[in-house]
Amino acid sequence: MTTHPAIENVSYDLQMEDAVAEIHKAGAKRVLIQLPDGLKPHADQIQSYIAKACPDVQLVFWADSCFGACDAPLHARHLGFDLLLAFGHAPWRS
Image 1 (cartoon, rainbow, N blue to C red):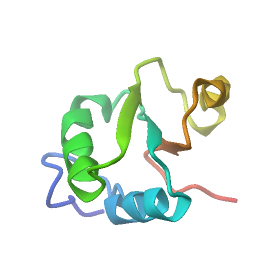
Image 2: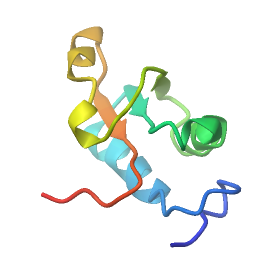
Image 3: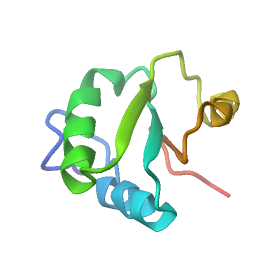
Image 4: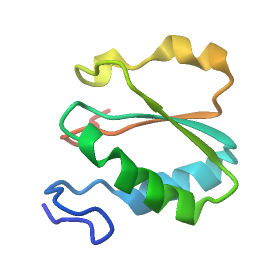
């Protein structure tokens, strides 16, 4: 995998362009971002990239633990978020 030029020292393809496109597609104004523990140290870089591309969007990071795709904070939908972006270490398989 390649390192995203805007995210230093991350050896995963975070598909940042896809994340931004999804925010625009959803017309989201409040976005909850969930990161696995290994990516949490890079939250500031992820926030900077998305905030630059989506300046009118409020970004909130889920600070609780994340043990994989089955650990999505579904109860957070009641907190008024328009979109949940869940980053992971592997591709999502449907």
